[in-house]
Image 1 (cartoon, helix red, strand yellow):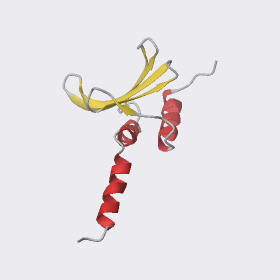
Image 2: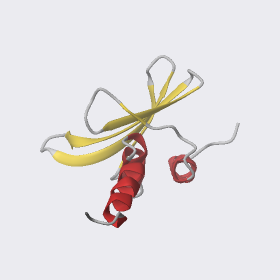
Image 3: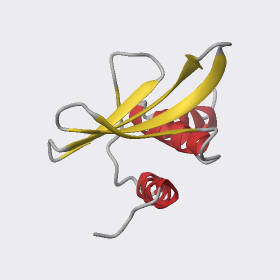
Amino acid sequence: MPKITNHELVNGLFVATEQDQIDWQPTAKPQEFAASFGGKWTLLISEGFTGVPLQFTRQLYVKDSEGTTMVRIADSDDSRIPELYEMARRYALKINEALADLLNEIKKPQK
């Protein structure tokens, strides 16, 4: 079985998110977004304050079907996590669609 590094995992998630292949959804927690795969795997990406002293961080979690965290990657571990978080947030909240609608409204002739 090949060893998959955290770097390879983030690469794959980054590309798949860019290509809208991951269906990120908001969770009940603000600033947290999730995607599930076949009932076997769940991705969670979140931002917030953790630790002592409190530090702002973004973190990616890969959980199995039992809810066990298999992998946790913080922005201090991989500098791409903040951008992945932002892409997931924009997808989950349909921000690109909202901004496209806003631009269309702006382009309409004013009465």
